[in-house]
Picture 1 (cartoon, helix red, strand yellow):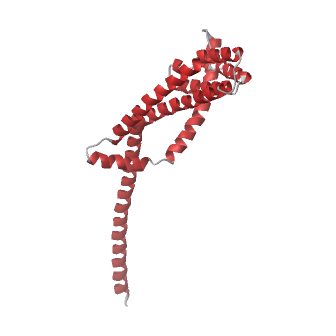
Picture 2 (picture 1 turned 180 degrees about the vertical axis):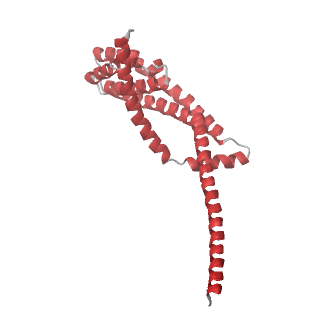
Length: 227
């Protein structure tokens, strides 16, 4: 094969490789675009899920946790007779920190945690534990009264601590969401949409029914506990 023939062969191979490369670049750009679009769809669906479903599930979980704690308290009451001082202390704790008194979601969660601890302490007849719950509340920013720099600084310091705890909690929740079946749920929702159904709305309706039933149960438990 002479030099001119060899050169022609190489030129043909080069042209073929360039054509192959160009095709691969197009495929890659399409795959990258599809991946970015999928990420966008998942984010959008997640926002819808959080707005329609997650908030209701969190509400139901909070109610169910209260039911659990009140149930423990009632079961414990059947096995011991709390002292008058323990009852009075529990009433004081409930009066100050009950979740129903919250003015925002973060405060509700904090009150919920403390109330659960109070119920456990009461169920165990643990007066010291109840006092610790009360102290924890008194150290919270919501319990700071007054105006001026000193009061503001104390509130801010306490809020910083709360935020740090909340950030850690959010980090754990985020990690859990990253391992969730979000995509499968989105796929089911898309299939349902082709059938003229709104899967998230259907799920929300079911959860709302559960919330109504749970609230009824919680009201019954609270009434028994107050007797």
